[in-house]
Image (tube, rainbow, N blue to C red; front, side, top):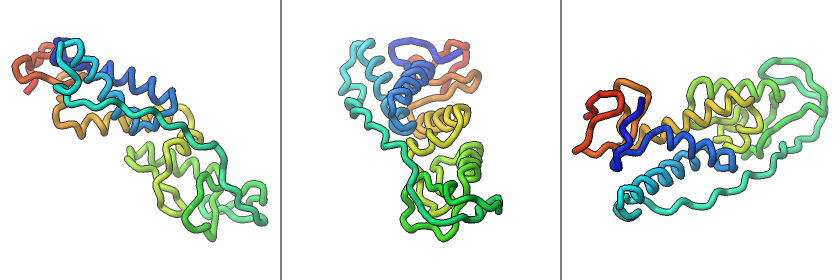
Length: 194
């Protein structure tokens, strides 16, 4: 159950659906979360007879196109991966993005992917490069990890964004939530929200 669909309440399910749509169109999870919240709140404000200004919402920015899906060339001879310590051939040299300084040692693709996936599993807000510690762009993360990890990364981004919104109320009884009018604090599942 989710918080009621009264005109003053926006359901989390609608945000999640819009979020998935925006990510599928190429938005980063962070951009998609913010835009989904804006669009769904605007829609609710319109259906309640309020203007977008009253809902304190700005028009969403157009989605940015993902950067090229190309690894950085790092030509040289054979090397040893600094993570798995296995000898690798020169054609296996791999960097998923341009580090600020070319690393002296490299890790192989499978170790880099495992590094990124472990950060997603640990619910890190910013996925870092194991070479230069810079934050990886979502487009890089999406092409490195499997579908399950990408979905987890996207879901975490949406959840973190909703948690930062002081006006979004999570239902203590079910997995739902929404923006609740203080005059109408009853949820569909029967719980009286604060």
